[in-house]
Length: 328
Image 1: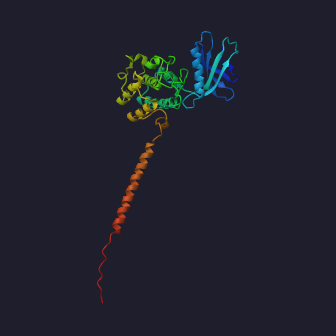
Image 2: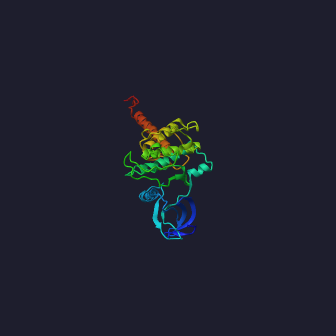
Image 3: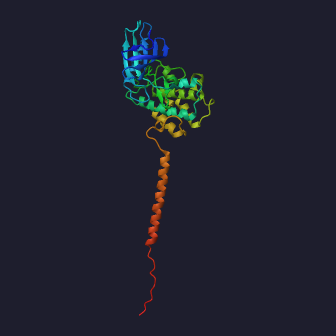
């Protein structure tokens, strides 16, 4: 039986258990070498363990080891625990860096109400992450985007976690996968065992709708469409954007996360309350105060130039010489 203060892998001292499911545990631990807090995810292997569970757990470790993004947990270690603390079963352990903060699901449970501006800002940050994942070769599909898998830190930056359902071999639409995902957030095609980049966009849209309405998308679904427009007052263009993001058919959604981000930036006017300016723009940021100052400076210089030209012209005109009467 695992317990606090126990050391795993001769390096990670367990501090606090964060989660526990059948055959799975998640611990906050300290790396006794680096003195940093880490997350240790554990999977017990027993005769009852589904082969697919172990396959997905190993895949998460493999995928994280090859990802490098500031808003995705960093892979640190992967090992097995065979004989320790009288464990009757072997365990697989995945270690990643700890992200201090709260999940969006926790914030919803605490009664947090998200404004349209806040949700727009979160959407942009998450789309940046999806652009990175989907534009890898081959693309990486998360397949389980939902409030509990999005962590908001103290600086209001968002992180995408839990890559246990990730798929890194999605080379073409129509490839068949194991059905994964969470009811309400999973798109129709994923329920049929298929996933494409637009599948993650649907899950993102469902998540944003949950934040805006405070209602699980599973409770808003009617005839395969999430009905939310009567639950919250939004900018019509933002409502349309969310409806396209969560269209039942994948081909009716945006073709890519990059296209979805561009559309959001072009059609929705808002002032972000979350994140810094760098989180809002895809390619570069705009300092509007500086832009205005530069514009005014340009106008002032133009006026000076015009004035100088006029002054020079006026003074260059030949003036009549005063007549002098000659006296002999």
